[in-house]
Image (cartoon, rainbow, N blue to C red; front, side, top):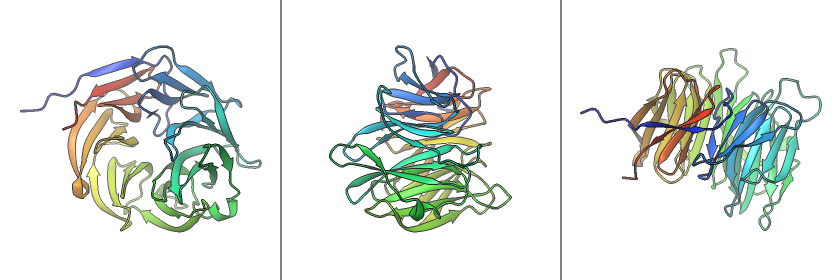
Length: 328
């Protein structure tokens, strides 16, 4: 028998999501996403009105993500064309800021954020479009207060193209999806081993066989998942630095990928109007769990809250949610 698909429910977010990659993040209590020149922060249960965090320069918000430092401290990071602002997870307090350097092209914007634990310290990396500039902050182990690190020379040759996504591990690995200088629109994944001072010790570049853009990536343990414009998901062994599986997940461009924080499940959101959910089994085997339909929607973000998966759709003022049931 064909399994019954979970029913779709909606949370009224009151403002529509922008068209950008990975445009939904959750810390279990809140959802956050980009809406024009604002970051929208709403309760995961749909209660109350959203908090709107406006970019001071009235620049388009390009990426919004919850991140966690060593010790469990959470931050909400809001990236835009001109700045990277670090907030408390409820959006009530601005804790730190980075600003785009003078002289950068007008079309440059911040894009991609990740945290890496190395040598007992937490380092936060923010990427950008244009030439793929990287910026680094360190978190004080005692207070979690952030400070900018002068690592421009050490970081300047890590990327040569625009960054689409980043992720980090607690084992000193920074992964970056970035464009190349080739005219075919291809991209590469850069794996950087981070030293105790926050600077990369060594880098490895992974390229796909065919020209395709990597839009999203996530590292969990020694496994990395990467989603592409071709609708494929690639599974990488971080230690061996090679692809071990390819999944034909969608018929069109994948705009977002996320891994469940406590279960061996990941999900993708695509232009084809589906959220696909997959089990990541031992041995890096991938098993299909469900394709969840959001008819006539261009999906731009995906996130997990408990046993539910949620998605944003471009120019839609609701979050779409599905229950996945309890852990097996």
